[in-house]
Image 1 (cartoon, rainbow, N blue to C red):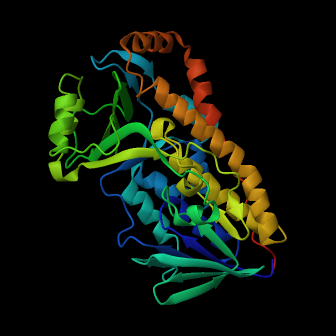
Image 2: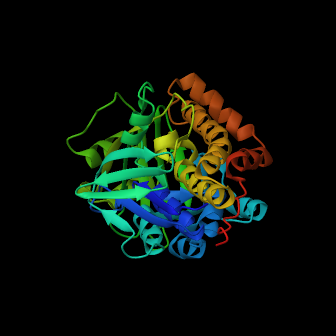
Amino acid sequence: MSSNSAVMVGGGIGGLAAAIGLRLAGWDVTVVERAAVLDDAGAGISLAANGMRALATLGVGEAVEAAARRQYTGGTRTPDGRRLALMDGAALERELGAPIVGIPRADLHRILREALPAGSLVIGAEVTDVVTTSPSRVQVTYGDTTLDADLVVAADGINSKLRRRLFPSHPGPVYSGSTVLRAITERPVDGLTADFEITWGHGAEFGHIAFPDGRAEWHAVLNAPAGVRYRDPLAEVRRRFARWHEPIPTLLAATRPEDVLHHDVNELVTPLPSYAVGRIALLGDAAHAMPPHLGQGACQALEDAVTLAAAVAGAGTVEAALTRYDAARRPRSQTVARDARRAGKMGQQLANPLAVGLRNAAIRLTPPGAMVRTVLKHADWTPPRIAPRAA
């Protein structure tokens, strides 16, 4: 390609990863993020093998592993503490050659930011205009600055303004029926033995991700009308989960009320017809926002980033690269999104007592090998190589 400048609209996980990948491909990059702080201090994240493979391809895998806790133990339980399924993270790691890890989102953001050169990241600036000025150039405006680019990456999240501009008839995100409260404990949690665990009740889920320093992120997912908020969110979670097994009470006792975040879970139910229009590519939640029930949202954004960078490095034109990117990413990511929606309906969102009992019995009867194959369906992904274009 004769051109080599790209602008990432959005500095979340996907936008930062895409910038790293495009730099590996030999491009100049600018990331424009409207938030003044690029982390989600009250949240953690699990990264499956596909996400870790993507990070390794971007050259930051070792740094992420060093800041994360490998997930070997845990599984799924019922509110009284009975086991539904055990997690065998070691078996999955042997099968896939990469671990499942838990890491604070703030740490992951920091590692991705540090992989970019100073000056390539603009924060506290909102993109106000994106205009195609010629078949080969796009202008991006934020504040008093206008950048000329050969490629624009819309990584501006589930409420993407660029997506609305490119697909004005698309219905956009819709409420999934679930709302999530989450926090990171203020201090290490004594007696926390499981690396990762979820518990399913009737229309409710409680889970945790353990971190290397002994703290943990917990999340409580509830069936609720959209927009419901609580005067004291931590008190509400304690009330709703008061009779659930340990370590749930201990996790909540180690949490400060001001640290609790509360968000509705929205998703793109209607698939986009393309992830590329002209020289603009959509990536991450802007392209395929999905519910969290498979833990694949960030992993799919990382796959997007690596695939986009590899396509740009290997194709003769930006247009050819984006055609390749769309063909590679849209079928897989939309399948994962659909599977995540189904997982929620059979998992956290299932509320009928009879249906819950049947589901629990089916899980207990499922052979461990079948459980592993279910995980492999989404986590077994081989990243393409990012080969810098010869000068």
